[in-house]
Length: 558
Image (cartoon, rainbow, N blue to C red; front, side, top):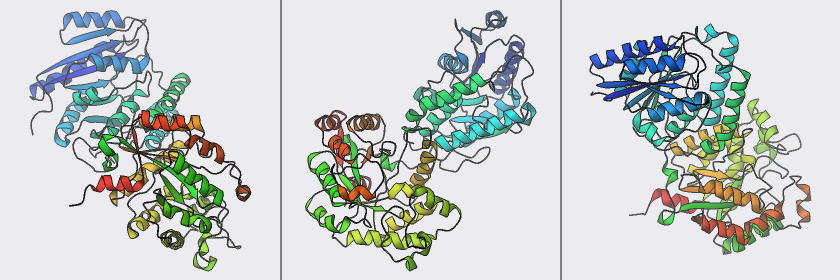
């Protein structure tokens, strides 16, 4: 199979490790000597990063370096924390492979490093990350902390790694050349894996026997350290969430579960750019048909502003009066499928009994609907019947439907998601909306569900913009909010993005029955403002519709 690399760097971040440093360096020498003897590598270096230790660590490190040319020492004049030490070590390492681990030797380095190199070679991995077989030796509190943290990373970032912060990660040089981390604290482990995962690198895991620290000082479970992890996670979350997953560098796509299984890569066909390499921007106005004045506002935002697309609320009271207005303009049209809200369903209660109450009314909002769905009281067949009626009501007006989405984003929920995706195929609708959020809460849940929606859409050949904005600012999309959202979308690396909004004429007595507290008129003003139109041009966006997105993915016809 060939060798993984010719050289290896082992990085030890150290702070007050006088009782561990000699054992750590000896263990590293033993492990790399075994790899050299086996022909797996030709050379190695041991990089010690002294993080402004106040004990004998700096002196002992310098003594080791003076006696052994394989040992390099980097001293921090001031303490930079774990993240700063790891960054220094990774930057100073010169090997084709780089391992960073702790000086207190949390696992048998000879056994673990030998296995990691072998697994990297066999499975073509870019990163090998170890996890502990048993965390209970450190007590129940640390075990609970670890479970909670790993779960948060998995839900918030879609990273399926069993033991994110365990200090044993073997990384190829090409990963470090492409992925730049910025954390100063213990969030650096998660940041490295998240960035590598989203960049398409292949990550595998394997289990090790864990030996808790018996020497030196650990601060990982201290209140200050936990607070710093949470603060860094909150600070970096918008940036990390904006990184669109790329195709795997190795082409693997298996689901990560245990040991040598891979982290799943999502098909990135949706990331193809718009005309002339410019980023396609879809500006979609929701709730067309809610009232005639909302429909008028949508069309004015299209005629005088940046709106390119709209989602029609077919069951709303204003749809019948305003549907024909869409025929004479070039705006893209989707269906805003709804089974919650103030308006009655299109079908009779007897046809969709699980969607309505005794008075034949739909659930007031997504919370009520989800409570019934979780309790198993929603029949997907009823959803499909009502959604079909809404799609066909729009199509009956000689309108071509180019995308589907849902009122209050219900299609994020798996039960609704599957129905919507199946209907997209049945009605030959090539695109769906995949909402995204930059908030910590409820953004963690939104983005976890969005990741699943995107994966299921890709599996069915349905496309979607690679990033989106508007869910966090819903009803408050004034000029400043629009400009901020456009700047955020412009920074993403994807080829197509969506901005959703809710414009409407400012004065609308028919809207009094909708207690949403939306600023319809302000959104219309923002979407038609000169400064916003200038921002679209300045950021290099190409305005378009979902139909343009579908066409760009399918390519030219023969």
